[in-house]
Length: 252
Image (cartoon, rainbow, N blue to C red):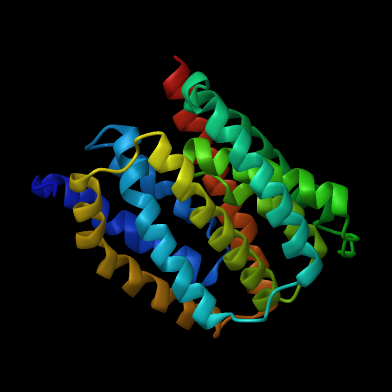
């Protein structure tokens, strides 16, 4: 287990933020966990530490949001996600994580700004679900989740325009990432992402992540649909800015 106290000063807030986000707000802010940990340990080690924690938080989400998902959206997102994971695993050693973060950051920020500027004074008409569009964003989500644990923005880009009721929206993200994160275990083992130090560190951080998850569930049940979507678009924009910053820094 990592024994540097400075690591835990960064890691404990990181996993609690991730837990709150995954518990009630689509998981978008969970993308900050790896960059925060990477302040103290190598990024690949941070990725290895986070995956078991994410898998455990997903089980809490299963318990809280069982059978509340949107079936059509879940099917197309998960199907695409499996393709994205396979592509990510096969190209993991050849891709620059910074470039992937930069790409996703540009999309996330552009998507949020377009929503605010175009619909500020217009009626918000829900988009129609689409298998091709959902499969595409699911594949992007699986790919970026494998490369950089940044799978939430692509899922949001498909689901948010549908204007689902907030619990249906969040339950769909919960079960999508349950499937994605558990499917990632096999390629992560194959890629050598797990070791004893990382797993014991994950175990030490897990209670803080679970506290965050239950707090996120509590918050989710006490806000309106309007506030939920405002928070989701705000989170998506902040996450996009963070990914832009991380990607640009890595490429400079």
